[in-house]
Amino acid sequence: MDLLSFPPIAAILDAAYALLMGLADLLHPLAGSASAALAVVVLTLLVRTILIPAGIAQAKAEQTRARLAPKLQALQRRYKNDRERMSRETMKLYADEKTSPLAGCAPVLIQAPIVGVVYALFLYPVIAGHPNALLTDQLLGVPLGASLVGTMAGGTATGATALMFGILLLVIVVVAEVTRRVFRPVVGASDAAPGVEAVARMAGFLQFGTAVVAIFVPLAAALYLVVTVTWTLVQRVVLRRRFPLGPVAG
Image (cartoon, rainbow, N blue to C red; front, side, top):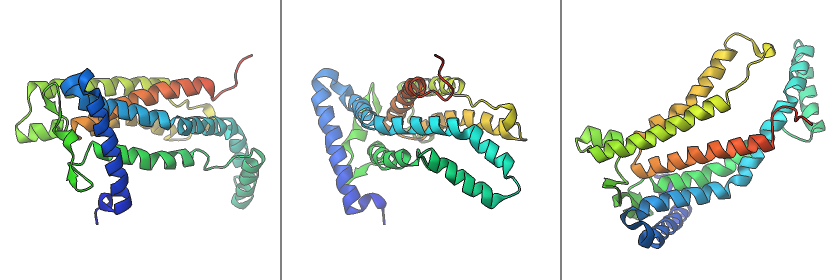
């Protein structure tokens, strides 16, 4: 059974689709033929705004993990030969700090279904049993349902298609590189176990995975990805300043 055809999920998708197309109609006097693409951007911004509290919760959890890291490392060294005692002391530490090892997981779980529903609007040609008219609209002559790989494989790629996806991919790559540099994991002497630095470096380059995804998905989904990664970078920078991982001077 197709999960998206499950009645409750189909109803939610249909409501989200109606909102998206309603936005496109409202924006048409302003944006003309680009109104559907602009609606994708506006809806994505609305969703990211709604999810700001989840981002704040994640930032707080990240700050807590950074604050507790030295204490956890001390426990691991002290009880390295007594796994049961180390587990008890670890849980006691979390209890004393009024937090949990799973802190930060709840915001991710809350975001997942919301993001999943929105993302589905930009991927599937049929929504709740009716055609997804969004994907037939165009942005500067490129259908929102066209993907870079799909048009190249089908021999329908045009200069406009290459230019459009080229711009979007460039933005995603630039944002990924800035994110990698700004949020590069710091590997200290205490973390100098074999392979730790390599894992940290690999995690940084995973930022570029979105660019790979963008060449396979429809243009509407690629627009969503561009807005999302850009928003995420700005939000992380702002929240990192609000909830720094290290001690705050003064």
